[in-house]
Image (cartoon, rainbow, N blue to C red; front, side):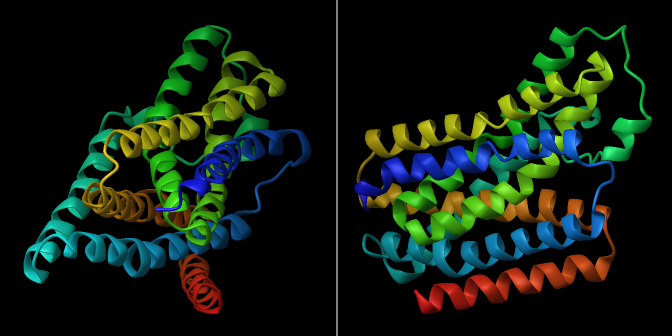
Length: 268
């Protein structure tokens, strides 16, 4: 593990998290949502994360665990911790109320057509929304940080994929805050604030690595991270991409993401 990558890993996680501010800022500069571009981009992000999870992170996890156990045992342990990552993320996602789940896509047109709701207080709406997004984005911060600490090239790829995913999440935060306050500026700042949950996830990842610095723990963590990324790809990225655009647009983005990241990793 390259501990010299830690600062850069934190920086990448912060970059990915603050991409929600781009979604919030779109309200200032755009009047319509480019659904085709978003659909392709989200599909592309899913392709990147799925490919990296199965070919790089999960393989690295099995390799590390295999130095301590037999081939059969290491394969089972890798699989079990991978499923644990999926289950943990699913549990966190289950904690998010359905009507406030950030996977619920909202567009700029909804902001323009909606009316502010004076009966809903900014503090109540803003704090609740921030808590919801924090819960949802926390494992993404862990995944980005852990990947970057292990391999900075993979970390950059994941950070970019998460950043693309966080742009529509920023819109999802902006819309209810705008409904509550009528202020686009406040909607932008709440969207920005919601992204800070990912650096918090990175801090948690750093704490785990500091507390359990043995390679076997790192192998378990990598398998869990792969599970987190796969769940995010299939539960958040692909459904959102499909909802934004046509089915084929999503598939083209998915395949493009796999091809681009595959070639990139082979050339580096």
